[in-house]
Each structure stands twice: as structure tokens, then as C-alpha cells.
Length: 426
Image 1 (tube, rainbow, N blue to C red):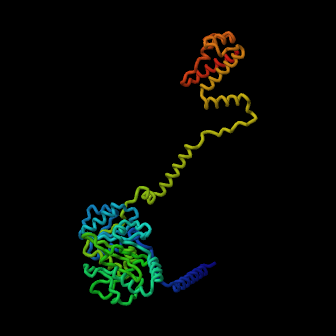
Image 2: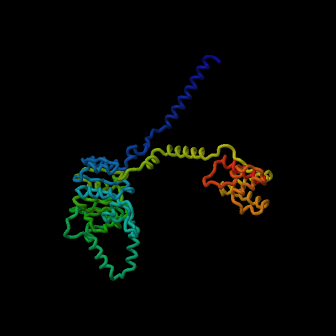
Image 3: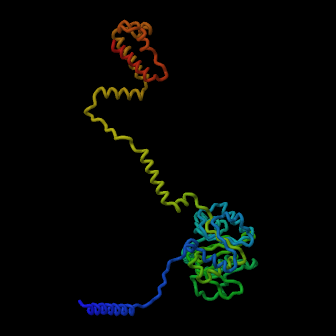
């Protein structure tokens, strides 16, 4: 291969690579793609972070708390407490403390957590039960209304409806509410029946909110002065509590990060908290130690459970091999006698065995000496001495009355030996 041929081959290869690169670059088209990484950690940890930022943008002072201890340094006037967390373990004392705080001039907003039980006449929600607020499912209201209309006479429907409207309507002489529903005769057509509406004074159109229409709030004591309804249910009630105000909502989801920007949800939050300092209370009770350990240290609890199981297994395991029961073929009469004696000793005690030996000696003596049982004790011992050729001291030691207290093992063995020697000599 000459140098000229090698140069030509290299140039051809470079040319082909250049043409291939130009073709590939001509086929490439730039584009933009947005990658969703999900919410930031602080957003995932705080479902009401957007609500906090929104209120701060409205020049409201906002802070959040994790327990009712915040009430110790929280004045009532000019304060709004948003109780949006779980209250399943709230105590009656804590509920009374919250209502007392509101009665001193504060504004308490909480979520009705449980449905009302007609059999127990309570829902288990301490705050709602104390205020006479009952929560139902909207579908249950529809079924009750349908059954009532089917059972009533059609001619009586109109007066009954008028009486119900008069009973639910606020008193005409009462103080004018800050927010109220529009009169049905002047209410425009409902374009959004699935949304909750709030009518304000001097406003022609209502504000719309995305409350969950599956729930309905009922004011059993007729204390509410303002409310917000959807087409089928009531989702917000507002009532006075002493010098303060209490607002009850059916659900808080419209103020969470993914729903606060919908409709007028953000405006409602500002409307309820305007001109006050806001405190968001995420939890009304403290977790106990077991709940905290299960939440943050599940692996440690599993390891501790395994350690305890291993310790119990180690303590309960037998030391050494199991002893097999003896085969029946090797059992002899001596073993049965020994086992019988051990059984009698455990069941009847020492006195029973010793008394049996003494009676056996007296029975043998009667056979060899008639009238032995009628002799005095001293003469009986002398007769036994002549028949057995044993000293009187040994006979008296064997035949003397037994003491009440149990004998030691050595004394019991010695006494049995004396009695057996005396019996064998007869």
C-alpha cells in the first residue's frame, strides 16, 4: 500500500463520516419538555401552606400551632383560630376551653368531623354537640324528604313547606347578619347547583365555593345568624358565642393547597379572617408515646419485638435433651413399690406411713400373744422385748406416739428403720 493510497482512503473515510454527521444533525429537532417533580417538601408537609401565604399577602398576621397550648398566650379579641386538624382524641375539658376562649371575643372556626347519630342523640364531635350543630349525609336528607312527601297529603304540602320555611328563617327583629342567603322569591336561577353560595348585603350575585356537597349541617337550636348553602345542603353556619363568634364548616378541603385557587374559596377564607390575627391549629391533641414511636421508629419497634421474642424463647427452652419415658418391659415390682411409697408420702404424709407400720407391728403381736391389745403400754413394750429380744429403749423409740410437726428426712428414715427391724423380728 503506497502512501498516496492510504491518504486517499483516509480522506474518503473522513468524508463519509462528515456526510453521516450532517445527515444525523439534519434529522434532529429541538423541543422543550416540562418535568413535574411534584410538590416541594414544605408543601407536602403543610396542606394549608398556600392559605398561609395568601393571608400574609392580605397583610394578616398568620402563625400555626400544633396543640391547644397556644391558648395559654393567645388573647381572644382580634384573633381567629382555625381549627383544621384532627380532633378525635379531644377531651371535654379542651372543648369547653375552646368555647370559653371564643366567648371572650375570639373567632373560632372548626370542621364538623362526625355524623349525627339519632339513636345516641350525639355525634361524638364535642364542639358540634355543645353548639347543637348536627351533620348528616345529603343523600339521607333526600331519602327523608322523599318519604315525607310520599306519606303526606298533597293538599297539606304547601302549608307544611311554609311552616318549615318560617321555622328555619331568622327572626325579622334580630340583628342583621353579616352574610345571609337570598330570599327564594328574589333569588336568580342557580347556574351552579353543585357549588355553595353565600349572599352578602348590597350584592346582586353570590360568591361560590367548592364545599363537598355530600354533607349537610343542621342548626338544631336555631342559633345561626349566617349560613352558606348549595342546592341541596348547608355547608357553613355562623353563630354567636358570648362576645365572640363560631363558624362551623362541613369540610376544609377547599382551603388546601390544591383547592384554594378554585372559585371564591380564597376570598371566603379572607372574608372570615379579615381584620384579625390568624392562628392555624393543625392538631387539637397530642400524640401519645406509642403513636409517635409507631410513626417515626417502626423499624426499632420491630427489632424490639424480635428481641423480646428471642429472650422469651431462650428463657422457655429446655436445658439439655428430653428424658424419654422408661419402657414398660423394664419396670419391676421394686419400682412399683417405691413409686407407691412416694405417692403415699406426697398424699398422706409421714404420719400415715409411720402409723401404718406401728399398726402392722401391733397386729402381728396380737397373733403371737393373745390379749396383747388389752395390756398397758409399758407391758406391751415388755412383751415385744421378750418376743423380739430387742432392748426396751429401741422398742419405746419405735412405738412412741408420733409428734405433730413433720420429721426431718434423717429422723424419718431412722424411725422407719426401727419399725421395720421390730416388725421383721416378729
